[in-house]
Amino acid sequence: MIVGDVLGLLGVGVAAGVVSTVVSLASIVSYPSLLAFGLPPLTANVTNTVALLFTGLGAAAGSRPELAGQGARVLRLGWIAALGGAAGAALLLLTPSRTFELIAPWLIAGASLLLVRPPSARKHEEHGVLARVALFVVAVYIGYFGAAGGILLFAVLSAMLDQAPARTNAVKNVVSGLANAVAAIGFALFGPVDWVAVGPLAAGFLLGGWIGPKIARRLPGQGLRYLAAVCGLAVAAKLGYEAYAS
Image 1 (cartoon, rainbow, N blue to C red):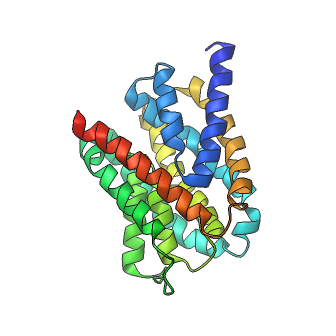
Image 2: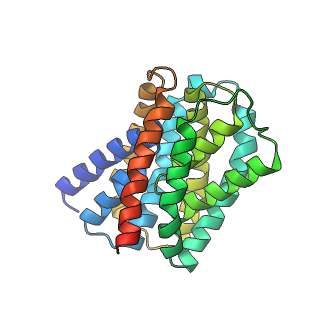
Protein backbone atom coordinates (compact mmCIF):
# COMPACT_ATOMS: atom_id res chain seq x y z
CA MET A 1 0.00 0.00 0.00
CA ILE A 2 1.46 3.37 -1.06
CA VAL A 3 1.46 6.52 1.07
CA GLY A 4 -1.48 7.96 -0.86
CA ASP A 5 -3.58 4.90 -0.06
CA VAL A 6 -2.72 5.14 3.62
CA LEU A 7 -3.64 8.83 3.79
CA GLY A 8 -6.80 8.16 1.78
CA LEU A 9 -7.96 5.41 4.15
CA LEU A 10 -7.08 7.59 7.15
CA GLY A 11 -9.24 10.40 5.76
CA VAL A 12 -12.08 7.99 4.99
CA GLY A 13 -11.86 6.68 8.56
CA VAL A 14 -12.07 10.17 10.08
CA ALA A 15 -15.07 11.10 7.93
CA ALA A 16 -16.83 7.79 8.59
CA GLY A 17 -16.11 7.98 12.33
CA VAL A 18 -17.72 11.42 12.57
CA VAL A 19 -20.70 10.31 10.48
CA SER A 20 -21.03 7.17 12.60
CA THR A 21 -21.21 8.94 15.93
CA VAL A 22 -23.49 11.75 14.72
CA VAL A 23 -25.94 10.08 12.29
CA SER A 24 -24.97 6.40 12.48
CA LEU A 25 -23.92 5.94 8.85
CA ALA A 26 -20.24 4.98 8.98
CA SER A 27 -20.49 2.02 6.63
CA ILE A 28 -22.18 4.13 3.97
CA VAL A 29 -18.94 6.11 3.78
CA SER A 30 -16.29 3.49 4.53
CA TYR A 31 -17.61 0.36 2.79
CA PRO A 32 -17.85 1.90 -0.73
CA SER A 33 -14.43 3.47 -0.17
CA LEU A 34 -12.89 0.07 0.56
CA LEU A 35 -14.45 -1.26 -2.63
CA ALA A 36 -12.95 1.70 -4.50
CA PHE A 37 -9.54 0.78 -3.08
CA GLY A 38 -9.93 -2.62 -4.76
CA LEU A 39 -11.10 -4.90 -1.93
CA PRO A 40 -13.62 -7.65 -2.82
CA PRO A 41 -17.10 -7.17 -1.24
CA LEU A 42 -16.78 -9.77 1.56
CA THR A 43 -13.24 -8.64 2.41
CA ALA A 44 -14.39 -5.01 2.45
CA ASN A 45 -17.31 -5.88 4.74
CA VAL A 46 -15.29 -7.76 7.35
CA THR A 47 -12.34 -5.32 7.16
CA ASN A 48 -14.75 -2.44 7.74
CA THR A 49 -16.31 -4.17 10.77
CA VAL A 50 -12.92 -4.84 12.36
CA ALA A 51 -11.86 -1.21 11.90
CA LEU A 52 -15.23 0.05 13.22
CA LEU A 53 -14.25 -1.28 16.63
CA PHE A 54 -12.12 1.84 17.01
CA THR A 55 -15.05 4.16 16.36
CA GLY A 56 -16.63 2.82 19.53
CA LEU A 57 -13.44 3.47 21.48
CA GLY A 58 -13.18 7.02 20.17
CA ALA A 59 -16.87 7.68 20.78
CA ALA A 60 -16.66 6.42 24.37
CA ALA A 61 -13.76 8.80 25.03
CA GLY A 62 -15.54 11.73 23.37
CA SER A 63 -18.91 11.08 25.02
CA ARG A 64 -17.86 11.04 28.68
CA PRO A 65 -20.21 13.91 29.69
CA GLU A 66 -23.21 12.18 28.07
CA LEU A 67 -22.26 8.76 29.47
CA ALA A 68 -21.96 10.03 33.05
CA GLY A 69 -24.24 7.97 35.29
CA GLN A 70 -25.09 5.50 32.52
CA GLY A 71 -22.44 2.86 33.16
CA ALA A 72 -24.85 0.30 34.57
CA ARG A 73 -27.28 0.87 31.72
CA VAL A 74 -24.54 0.38 29.11
CA LEU A 75 -23.57 -2.91 30.77
CA ARG A 76 -27.20 -4.12 30.88
CA LEU A 77 -27.75 -3.37 27.22
CA GLY A 78 -24.23 -4.10 26.03
CA TRP A 79 -24.20 -7.84 26.68
CA ILE A 80 -27.39 -8.25 24.63
CA ALA A 81 -25.83 -6.30 21.77
CA ALA A 82 -22.65 -8.37 22.01
CA LEU A 83 -24.61 -11.62 21.69
CA GLY A 84 -26.52 -10.23 18.73
CA GLY A 85 -23.32 -9.07 17.04
CA ALA A 86 -21.82 -12.54 17.44
CA ALA A 87 -24.91 -14.16 15.94
CA GLY A 88 -24.89 -11.73 13.03
CA ALA A 89 -21.21 -12.35 12.30
CA ALA A 90 -21.79 -16.11 12.27
CA LEU A 91 -24.70 -15.67 9.84
CA LEU A 92 -22.57 -13.53 7.54
CA LEU A 93 -19.81 -16.13 7.38
CA LEU A 94 -22.25 -18.99 6.80
CA THR A 95 -25.05 -17.61 4.63
CA PRO A 96 -25.59 -15.29 1.62
CA SER A 97 -26.58 -11.71 2.35
CA ARG A 98 -29.35 -11.41 -0.28
CA THR A 99 -32.19 -11.72 2.25
CA PHE A 100 -30.83 -8.89 4.39
CA GLU A 101 -30.25 -6.79 1.27
CA LEU A 102 -33.96 -7.07 0.47
CA ILE A 103 -35.33 -6.29 3.93
CA ALA A 104 -32.71 -3.71 5.00
CA PRO A 105 -34.33 -0.74 3.16
CA TRP A 106 -37.66 -1.38 4.86
CA LEU A 107 -36.07 -1.73 8.30
CA ILE A 108 -34.08 1.48 7.89
CA ALA A 109 -37.04 3.45 6.49
CA GLY A 110 -39.28 2.28 9.34
CA ALA A 111 -36.71 3.20 11.98
CA SER A 112 -36.18 6.60 10.37
CA LEU A 113 -39.91 7.35 10.44
CA LEU A 114 -40.03 6.36 14.11
CA LEU A 115 -37.37 8.98 14.81
CA VAL A 116 -39.47 11.68 13.11
CA ARG A 117 -42.41 11.05 15.45
CA PRO A 118 -42.76 13.46 18.38
CA PRO A 119 -41.11 11.94 21.48
CA SER A 120 -43.59 9.84 23.45
CA ALA A 121 -44.40 10.92 26.97
CA ARG A 122 -44.16 7.29 28.03
CA LYS A 123 -41.10 5.21 27.19
CA HIS A 124 -40.95 1.43 27.10
CA GLU A 125 -39.26 -0.19 30.06
CA GLU A 126 -35.64 -0.94 29.16
CA HIS A 127 -35.85 -4.15 31.20
CA GLY A 128 -38.87 -5.38 29.22
CA VAL A 129 -38.68 -8.54 27.13
CA LEU A 130 -39.86 -6.92 23.88
CA ALA A 131 -37.36 -4.09 24.20
CA ARG A 132 -34.51 -6.53 24.73
CA VAL A 133 -35.61 -8.72 21.83
CA ALA A 134 -35.68 -5.65 19.58
CA LEU A 135 -32.19 -4.71 20.75
CA PHE A 136 -30.90 -8.23 20.06
CA VAL A 137 -32.43 -8.32 16.56
CA VAL A 138 -30.87 -4.97 15.66
CA ALA A 139 -27.49 -6.17 16.97
CA VAL A 140 -27.77 -9.25 14.75
CA TYR A 141 -28.35 -6.90 11.84
CA ILE A 142 -25.31 -4.82 12.80
CA GLY A 143 -23.07 -7.88 12.94
CA TYR A 144 -24.46 -9.30 9.69
CA PHE A 145 -25.17 -6.47 7.27
CA GLY A 146 -24.57 -3.26 9.18
CA ALA A 147 -25.66 -0.53 6.73
CA ALA A 148 -27.40 2.18 8.81
CA GLY A 149 -27.59 -0.27 11.72
CA GLY A 150 -26.85 2.59 14.08
CA ILE A 151 -30.06 4.32 12.99
CA LEU A 152 -32.04 1.19 13.83
CA LEU A 153 -30.31 1.03 17.21
CA PHE A 154 -30.88 4.73 17.86
CA ALA A 155 -34.59 4.29 17.11
CA VAL A 156 -34.89 1.31 19.48
CA LEU A 157 -33.01 3.09 22.27
CA SER A 158 -35.02 6.29 21.74
CA ALA A 159 -38.18 4.26 22.32
CA MET A 160 -36.68 2.70 25.46
CA LEU A 161 -34.94 5.59 27.19
CA ASP A 162 -36.50 8.80 28.52
CA GLN A 163 -33.58 11.21 28.18
CA ALA A 164 -32.00 13.79 25.86
CA PRO A 165 -31.16 12.53 22.35
CA ALA A 166 -27.46 13.31 22.83
CA ARG A 167 -27.33 11.00 25.87
CA THR A 168 -29.21 8.27 24.01
CA ASN A 169 -26.84 8.71 21.07
CA ALA A 170 -23.86 8.22 23.39
CA VAL A 171 -25.34 4.95 24.67
CA LYS A 172 -25.99 3.93 21.06
CA ASN A 173 -22.37 4.56 20.11
CA VAL A 174 -21.01 2.36 22.91
CA VAL A 175 -23.59 -0.42 22.58
CA SER A 176 -23.13 -0.51 18.81
CA GLY A 177 -19.37 -0.63 19.40
CA LEU A 178 -19.82 -3.72 21.56
CA ALA A 179 -21.84 -5.46 18.84
CA ASN A 180 -19.15 -4.57 16.31
CA ALA A 181 -16.37 -5.68 18.66
CA VAL A 182 -17.71 -9.20 19.03
CA ALA A 183 -18.35 -9.45 15.28
CA ALA A 184 -14.83 -8.15 14.65
CA ILE A 185 -13.31 -10.91 16.80
CA GLY A 186 -15.15 -13.52 14.75
CA PHE A 187 -14.05 -11.95 11.49
CA ALA A 188 -10.47 -11.61 12.70
CA LEU A 189 -10.36 -15.34 13.44
CA PHE A 190 -12.35 -16.70 10.50
CA GLY A 191 -12.87 -13.94 7.90
CA PRO A 192 -10.73 -12.59 5.03
CA VAL A 193 -9.64 -9.38 6.81
CA ASP A 194 -7.24 -7.09 4.94
CA TRP A 195 -5.00 -6.12 7.85
CA VAL A 196 -2.99 -3.64 5.81
CA ALA A 197 -6.15 -1.60 5.25
CA VAL A 198 -7.34 -1.98 8.84
CA GLY A 199 -4.47 0.08 10.32
CA PRO A 200 -5.05 3.51 8.70
CA LEU A 201 -8.82 3.04 8.56
CA ALA A 202 -8.96 2.19 12.28
CA ALA A 203 -6.80 5.20 13.17
CA GLY A 204 -9.21 7.44 11.26
CA PHE A 205 -12.22 5.80 12.93
CA LEU A 206 -10.69 6.40 16.35
CA LEU A 207 -10.15 10.11 15.66
CA GLY A 208 -13.51 10.58 13.94
CA GLY A 209 -15.30 8.73 16.73
CA TRP A 210 -13.75 11.12 19.25
CA ILE A 211 -14.69 14.23 17.24
CA GLY A 212 -18.28 13.16 16.45
CA PRO A 213 -19.80 13.50 19.96
CA LYS A 214 -18.52 17.09 20.16
CA ILE A 215 -20.65 17.85 17.09
CA ALA A 216 -23.68 15.85 18.27
CA ARG A 217 -23.94 17.64 21.60
CA ARG A 218 -24.14 21.01 19.81
CA LEU A 219 -27.13 20.08 17.67
CA PRO A 220 -30.24 21.94 18.89
CA GLY A 221 -33.09 20.16 20.67
CA GLN A 222 -34.39 17.21 18.68
CA GLY A 223 -32.09 18.09 15.76
CA LEU A 224 -30.07 14.91 16.18
CA ARG A 225 -33.18 12.74 15.78
CA TYR A 226 -34.37 14.60 12.69
CA LEU A 227 -30.94 14.63 11.05
CA ALA A 228 -30.57 10.88 11.60
CA ALA A 229 -34.08 10.31 10.23
CA VAL A 230 -33.46 12.27 7.02
CA CYS A 231 -30.15 10.50 6.42
CA GLY A 232 -31.76 7.14 7.15
CA LEU A 233 -34.56 7.68 4.64
CA ALA A 234 -32.02 8.67 1.98
CA VAL A 235 -29.99 5.52 2.66
CA ALA A 236 -33.14 3.36 2.63
CA ALA A 237 -34.07 4.75 -0.79
CA LYS A 238 -30.55 4.11 -2.12
CA LEU A 239 -30.35 0.56 -0.77
CA GLY A 240 -33.88 -0.19 -1.93
CA TYR A 241 -33.07 0.88 -5.47
CA GLU A 242 -29.90 -1.21 -5.51
CA ALA A 243 -31.63 -4.29 -4.04
CA TYR A 244 -34.78 -4.30 -6.17
CA ALA A 245 -33.44 -2.87 -9.42
CA SER A 246 -30.78 -5.59 -9.74
